[in-house]
Length: 298
Image (cartoon, rainbow, N blue to C red):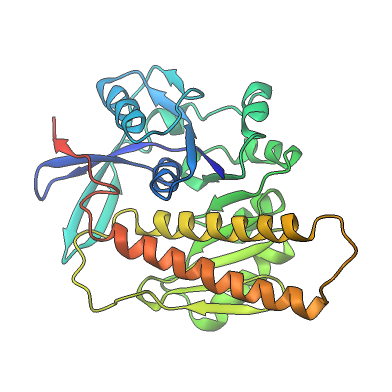
């Protein structure tokens, strides 16, 4: 499997210990996918500054293909991270920097490149919603992370172009979660997934509701930075691989399985995908920064 993150990259500055680490939703997706053993790539606008140089060096060291990154004049996005008992609070210091000011354009060249992947990730913090519909021309599942900054209009605008619609809903009631999950399907996504912190995650596929609580809630975590991105990576890659395997086995042969068999397969696959997602999330919580590789702040 080959996975591609298209979108944001930032530098997270930890003022508690004076260290800094790289991150970003789509960048983390590419790194975590590589850690799972998949061929991974990241495409995004990278600032022509020392932070941008560091971002590319770290990605190359992680084995991530950065051949389709675009360097532009401007600042790398900077965030302030503060930890309280391992749980991180985050604030943007320069509003995403060059990624926000000059969002990536999905060119014909980038589309041709992206067509060779099995899963593509992007999201709200890529600031390129106007470009997302171009990905519909590809026969590749698209993951969109709405983060915790979303509303009905953003669902209506983006869900027609994405297969996996992830959003954070820690403060939502059960009824509100279900209502918004139904909206993601109504507006065109194949799966709606709401992550709700220590309450776990809820998934809706248009037919059934699935729930999964996090693993090892009693564990004393080190840093929750990147846990959501790790969950998304684990879930989407496992789910996509399972769907691909089903098609490889069945192919264009006369159906030898019943609709009930397919439902059973899909339910088992959902449980596996959520389990892998939980493993990735809790593993990431045991590392400072999204995936380590930090250095003293400058």
